[in-house]
Structure formats: C-alpha cells, structure tokens
Image (tube, rainbow, N blue to C red):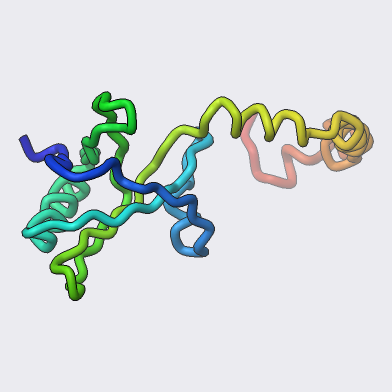
Length: 146
C-alpha cells in the first residue's frame, strides 16, 4: 500500500512544533491544525519522498504510521517531505499535520478575551458600509440585474 510510510523499528519519533514562515503556510485549512516536524533515519529516503509526490499529484493523502510511547499505532498526514544525506546515513525530514491537543484548545479558549470580542461586534454593527439602505442605488452601480 503506497498511502503510508511506516516506521518499522526504533523509538517513537520526536515531534517538534514549527513556526517557520513557509511551513506555517502548510496549515491553511478551515480546520485548526498544528504543523509538526520530525526526522527519521531511512535506507531509501528519495524513494519515500517520491512516494509522497505521487500521492500528492493524485491529490490523495499520505500518512506517517508509527507507534506512540504507549505502543499504540497512530498516523498523521504528511504535508511536506525531504530526504537528506548525513553522517549517520539518509534522513527523512517530514512535516505533518496534527489536530491540536485538548490542552492546546483549552489554553486558546482561556486566552480569549470576551471584552475584545464585544468591542469588535460593536464596531461591526456601527459600520456604515454594511447598511443596505445607506445608498439605495448600490445595485444599479454594480450593474446587477433584478
């Protein structure tokens, strides 16, 4: 099956949160995801990157399958991949998409300031550009047909 890359031996991968400019763009989605990064050693890095490219060309997701620290299998969609040669052999660099944890969402909700939100609603309600009756000829100016 070519829709996955499986870590077959070794420790659980170490995932790092990333904030690089180009990598943040990988997160453009209607759903709140985290973009994380990991490195894994491999014997066939270029072939694995090519597997990712083929899946993306077909517009199908490809997943990294691994065992978490509890020994349970997990998977995460791969959004970018690169293979490099190092002193220890080939290394596969993977950028993955992951749903935020409950604690991440809780911290985001706690940082939310309700007073700021109320000020934005007031500004929105006071906006004259949104008043349909302010300029009665808007439809004709735009060339709209009734």
